[in-house]
Length: 368
Ligand SMILES: Nc1ncnc2c1ncn2[C@@H]1O[C@H](COP(=O)(O)OP(=O)(O)O)[C@@H](O)[C@H]1O
Ligand SMILES: [Mg+2]
Image 1: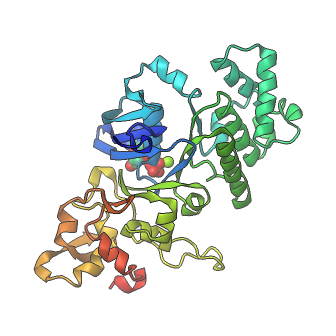
Image 2: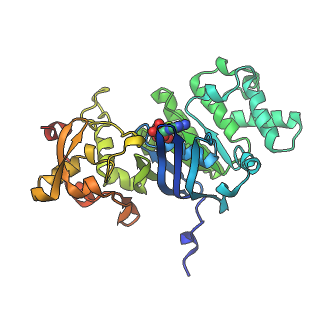
Image 3: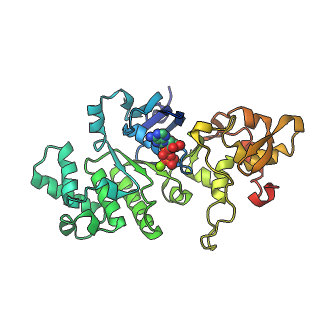
C-alpha cells in the first residue's frame, strides 16, 4: 500500500492533460495543450511564463468562464477535492465559483460594480451562498474587510470602488473572494497593476490568509519576483505547455529548462536600476503557427550551444526572428516530453543536462 500522502487525489486541485482549444475562422488555437499539475492543500502553486503562453486560459478553464464557442475543453480532467469539475452542470459550477473557489484578477475595477458600495457588494456575495439576514451579511462583510487589512472597516463599508486606491480595491476583491470561505483561491496576475510596495503588501496578505485559512492558491504571474515571494511549487509555462515543474526552492537554486534560465537572466539585477542586462531574444510564438519540435528551439541558447559540439549532420539551420541559427536536428523535429530529470523536478528538454552543466552564455555572444 502506498502511504496516504502519495495517493492520487490527495491534492486540493488536480489537473490532468488539460487541452483547451479555440475554434476560430483562422484555425484552431491550441491555447492550452496537455497541461498537468496539482495545487496542494494550503500551499501556493505558481504558474509562470511570458504573456500569451496560456496561463489565463488555464485559469478560466478551471472556472469554466471561457466563451464556448469558440473555446472547447477537448480533453483532460479537473478535480477539486476529488470531484470532477468537468462533469458538473452550469448551475453546479456557479456554486463552485465563489463557493469552494474564490478568484481575483489583475484589474479589480473591472470586477467591482462602480454604482454599489464596496461593503454592499461583499454582503451580496455573502448572501448569494449562505442563507443569512441582510444584517448578518453586513456584519460578515465588515469582518471580511477587517480580515484583509482595511482600516476602519465599518466606515469603509459605505465607500464606492472609485474612492479607494488600487491596493485597497484589490483588498476588497480578496474580501469578496473569501466571503464563502473557499478552499482554493485562483489569483490571475493579482498584483500586476500595483506599484512594488503595494504588490508586496498584497502578497503578504495572501500569505497570511493562506496560513490562517489553509487556503490553496493557484497564483498566475509573468513575474519571477512574485513567484519568489509566494510559491511552494512552480510550473513554468511556454507555448501552451508546462516545460518545467518543481518546488520553488529547487527552481530558484537550479532551473533546468533553458527557457526558465532565460527568464532568470532577463530579470533586472539588483542595484542596476530598471536595466535588463540580458533578455530572451525573440517572442512567444503564435499558437496558429507554432514551431515544429520543441517550441522553444528558435529562441534556445542551449540548443545553439549544443549544436556547436555536434556533427554538422546531426544539426539543422532554422530561420528565427533574429536570423538563421544552427540547432540539434532533434530539437527542431521532435517535441520533448515533460519528464523527471531529478527527484521531484520535471523538465521538457532534450538537453536539460547540457543546460544544467553550463548555464548558457549571455545573449550577445550567441548572436553572430
Ligand atoms: N477568445 C479567444 N479566441 C482565440 N484565441 C484566444 C482567445 N483567448 C485567448 N486566446 C489565445 O490563447 C493564447 C493564450 O492566452 P492567455 O491564456 O490569455 O495567455 P497568458 O494569460 O499566459 O498571457 C494566446 O495566444 C491568446 O491569443
Ligand atoms: Mg493572462
